[in-house]
Amino acid sequence: MRDINAIRDTYRKCFNLPPELVVCSPGRVNLIGEHTDYNEGWVFPAALDLGTLVAARRRDDGVLRSVALRMNDEDSIRLTDLRPREGVAWTRYVRGMAAMLNESGCAIPGADLLIDGDLPLSSGLSSSASLEMGIAVALAALAGCPIERKVLARLGQRAENEIIGVQSGIMDQLAVACGVAGHALLIDCRSLDATSVPIPPEVRILVIDSAVPRTLAGSAYNQRRAECEAALHKLRAAQPDLQALRDVTPELLAAEAQRLDSVELQRARHVVTENERVLASVAALRQGDVARFGQLMIESHASLRDDYAVSGPELDTLAATALETPGVLGARLTGAGFGGCVVALVEAQHAEAAVATIGERYRRLTGRQGAAYICAPSDGAHVVDEAA
Image 1 (cartoon, helix red, strand yellow):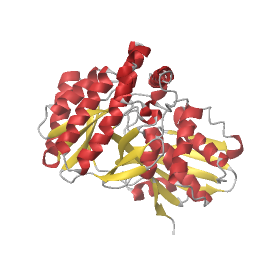
Image 2 (image 1 turned 90 degrees about the horizontal axis):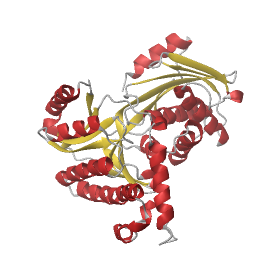
Image 3 (image 1 turned 180 degrees about the vertical axis):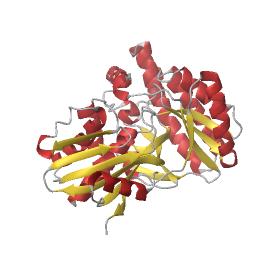
Image 4 (image 1 turned 180 degrees about the horizontal axis):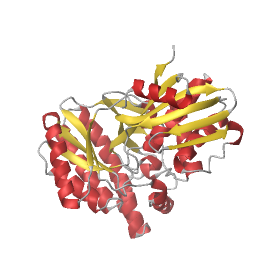
């Protein structure tokens, strides 16, 4: 991420005082397990060494002032009148997290916030969750109000659901809040248990931006969730104790497929098979079988393309281009789809060459100037710098 000293210097120029603290809040890439989180299933994300920086200092007048460098914009509002559902998108995340913290019993002070970072925006790398958790950790630290990480993640999810209007699951916030350097996290989205799994040193994670921007609120994300809920409702006629699509076995889905229309069957089939792929992928990684992990990534992309219908020409081209590149073991769209990024697993010795090759071929095939990053799994959102 960007230099901590640089954001401290910029903060002093903006506010004429140094920040009390700086928070580093990563983005996340989901290695496998897409659209399973809101179906109470399993996901396998990693926090990234790309993300959001939030520099902060208390103020005593009850005003929350935020400056977003990348947006070339600022916002100022009293904590007694946050109005989080108003304003441009980025301000709603900031105000929304302040409102959620207050509601949870954390009496946050007024603050001057400076927000910056190097995470690609609208690319499926959880820039919104990165911002939410960065703001939450900064304001809670200023308030001297320790909050358990899973609680912070829940507050971020509520901000997405209730303020932004995206009926997302909790994967993004949990991954950003609870990341462990060098590891991915197997998250059970029902219990919120998170188990760290080492990424073998012989592979690297490539994140490749298609340069097709995406926004969840403007996509068919909420529609997909409704389709899953409709499928679950119909399957409960056969098995009333089903809590979520997570509980549907392949055998049950095959036996009761006639209860669903063709779209509902496709959506349910993706969720059921994707949960199986997540658990199989983690088992493969623990055994050091990176080739098997890569194959499961390929199968995941096909399911997202064919059964969940959230891919697109650019994402398909980018995934295929990656798979034709020496050293690449697997590739799939990551994030909700509808644009954004592809994630690939590549042998370490081929990583640099793969970035150049994939980028050049993708530009030639689509005319789009994508970008690729060799990423390392990082720690979750945390205070990295405090004033003496």
